[in-house]
Image 1 (cartoon, rainbow, N blue to C red):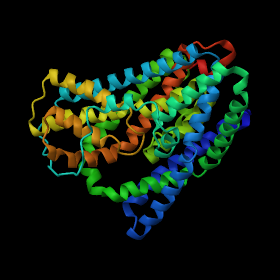
Image 2: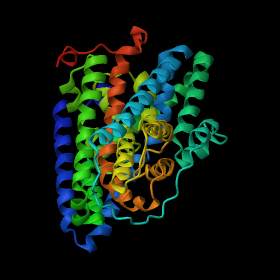
Image 3: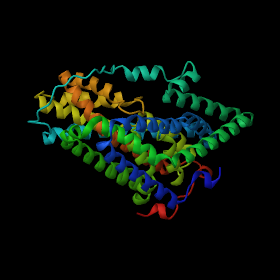
Length: 421
């Protein structure tokens, strides 16, 4: 795998990040004044961009995971990488849920706020979703898993094939070489699509702002401001200080500069799955071994829902205070566990948390009329939540680079710059 394919120069990456940021700002401003006739145009461009980016997600994930497992060299090491990834993601999601519940509870956020009880046609997610997820992990039809976009089933199928390739040894080399070729092709295509990202996020955000309008945004500004502040602090403290610097011993400054393209793309598209190819490139730039990133990043896009947990927990307490619904600390503990479990297997697509929140609201005993306002909040905060989740995936991968302790032949040495703040 060539260096030029995997690792663009820092100057090019910074220029692209700046262009994406400009696209986001201009997209938000244009969305406020966009005429109705322009909406179909921006929608068309945004859809084409997302399709161009997402068409390579599953070939990239499947092939890079098989190549990564083969590169690890043993079944036990593969289990170690997967186990550590699960530990990081579930642990941070649980902490995020805890923060989202007890912070507004302690500050009594929402008390005295008039909530407009608008109805919304939303079906609550069943609380058996974790059981359903477990029993459907192994795909009865692997091709259907690709067609239907079931990331967990694709991951499990790739792991099974990768471990089998390990067991077969040299007999599987032709197939592994094919996967390496497809992986290279996927990365090359993603690299080309990356240069259209500023236009893609411009159109995506313009459509979102235009659909909601300035009045809706301003009416929810206080709640959104607090949520974004909490997520920003969570990113800096938990991801930057604890995972990247504390555990990974990696430069916080270099980390945030490197992951900026992935974070901005996640913000503009509100899809962690669509950002996977860009996240993979960012991980490569930080010398995260392919054996780690090829498994940890797709798994994170599926089950790492830290920001979603913060938003849902926060809004449960906010609506409880606003509607005068009493939630005991015992019930908060039930909501905490439920929120963590419901996040596992949630798809990494825009607004996937709405059905899960409906289930949590039922558990907490909140009136159904609050769903109308929650839908509005979720749409407006979804971009920031997705950005937070993607940064969490990458921060965990950087931490795992140091804690997984793979054989030295499979690890890249940290650069001197990466070890200093």
